[in-house]
Amino acid sequence: MGLFGLLKMQFVCHLIICYVFLVSGLIVNFLQLCTLPLWSINKQLARKVNCRLAYCISSQMVALLEWWSGTECTLYTDPASYPFYGKEDAIVVLNHNFEIDFLCGWTFCERFGVLGSSKVLAKKELAYVPVIGWMWYFLEIVFCKRKWEEDQKTVVQSLQRLKDYPENFWFLLYCEGTRFTQKKHKISMEVAERKGLPKLKYHLLPRTKGFCVTVQHLRGKVCVSSVVTAVYDSTLNFRNNQTPTLLGILNGKKYHADLYVRRIPLDSIPENESECAIWLHKLYQEKDELQEKYSVTGRFPGPTLSPPRRPWALLNWLFWICLLLFPLCLLLLQLFHSGSAFTICTTVLLCFAASLGVRWMIGQTEINRGSSYGNKEGQLNNNAQVSKVTNKDSRTTKTSAACTAGIKNNHEQFSTKQEGNTQLDQDTGSCSC
Ligand SMILES: CC/C=C\C/C=C\C/C=C\C/C=C\C/C=C\C/C=C\CCC(=O)SCCNC(=O)CCNC(=O)[C@H](O)C(C)(C)COP(=O)(O)OP(=O)(O)OC[C@H]1O[C@@H](n2cnc3c(N)ncnc32)[C@H](O)[C@@H]1OP(=O)(O)O
Ligand SMILES: CCCCCCCCCCCCCCCCCC(=O)OC[C@@H](O)COP(=O)(O)O
Image (cartoon, rainbow, N blue to C red; front, side, top):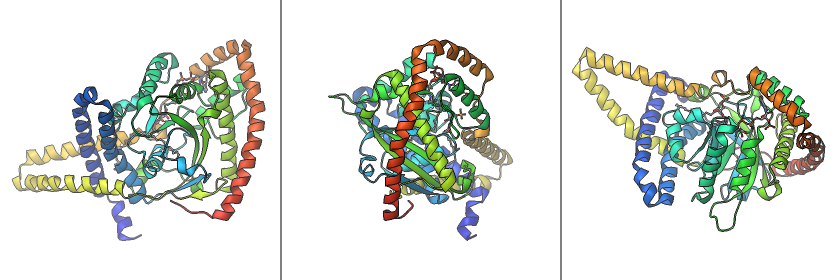
């Protein structure tokens, strides 16, 4: 291990990184607050300013992943789709298995120039996380309580607001609604069985409401400046069964992420809600097949392309480090010079409290501290009842049958495309970004 490798594992380095993140984050949150009057004067300008301010925060975490831990990200995609990335608004559908999947998503946003404006359908609890959650408020992130009866109105309103967004954005949807655990998987497959849907091996059963409403409300309309034109069906894996964590990244551990992206024009997705739900179930069956291939071969099919790592995230990080380390050093010098035991104890206590706060924030990303959503027997029983009722409904019967039949057809097309991609891959060779 080199000197830099040793440095990355030092607690004092972690303290400095967290201090810079926290203080710069709070400064940015304050600046975002100052933009409030601008919203009523020039909304589009306020949005643009907030995108740039948000970039100052999220790009620090991207810099940590790309430059500090040196994690590599390989993109598998059709070269014909590549020119669209970053140039259009899109809905991203991603599997939800890893603690840092959101960070890998951000890395790709950064490389395609949409990091500041990236959006997500996020659980409401995240809105209260200092720095990131507060930043999201000004980015018009869509929050949900994961209770459709309560969410329907607010989610639709928030989506409607995005229709005239002045920057290109990717709207991330984790349709599984929660991170994969064995218990959640077992329960969700029981739901699938009751609904007569094919079982998934690597995914939870997708929740269709959020996806359908997003597709419906972000769909293009003439005379609206911002329109979503595609869905990016994305699947993320880490090489050699790595289970990356944010603490690992902070410790400088290097991982290798593989992201498979298939661009699907929005026009090809049904507008009707029940058909759209069938479509999503089919997509997840295809995603499951793809995961099976990855688990057997250790790679996705198709060519790999290399969006370059940009220097801006690193430069922004260095800027904040320089800006905030200088006053910290002065403060510490003065402190020890004063010799006052009270002042020293207070400062140590404050540092301790701040590091506990950051540890709590990191805890938000940890799967073993995750929510019980999708984990409850009660929820399952409720759904069993709902399912019993809806199974009488011809729509559900149609859903199950269409899903099982559709997956066969669709998968045949998908396999053909993948075989085509494999051919391309041999031509192109593999390269990492
Ligand atoms: C080129 C590069 C391309 C890509 C790069 C990749 C990514 C980059 C993109 C953008 C990055 C942007 C930001 C990233 C930064 C940070 C993100 C971080 C975190 C946020 C993530 C979250 O917070 S995830 C949690 C919140 N989000 C969601 O839940 C979304 C999905 N959920 C929904 O859509 C839901 O429908 C809902 C939330 C809107 C409503 O929830 P509810 O539970 O009420 O849903 P439903 O009514 O749909 O659920 C009931 C139905 O579900 C069935 N079901 C299935 N399994 C179960 C189960 N286990 N228990 C009970 N019920 C279950 C049930 O049968 C019901 O079926 P019906 O047929 O009756 O509908
Ligand atoms: C420069 C970097 C310094 C790093 C140190 C500080 C790090 C602080 C990090 C704060 C991160 C807070 C953002 C949280 C995003 C978490 C995304 C996530 O994965 O949420 C889970 C939900 O989808 C589902 O929840 P569950 O139902 O599984 O429960």
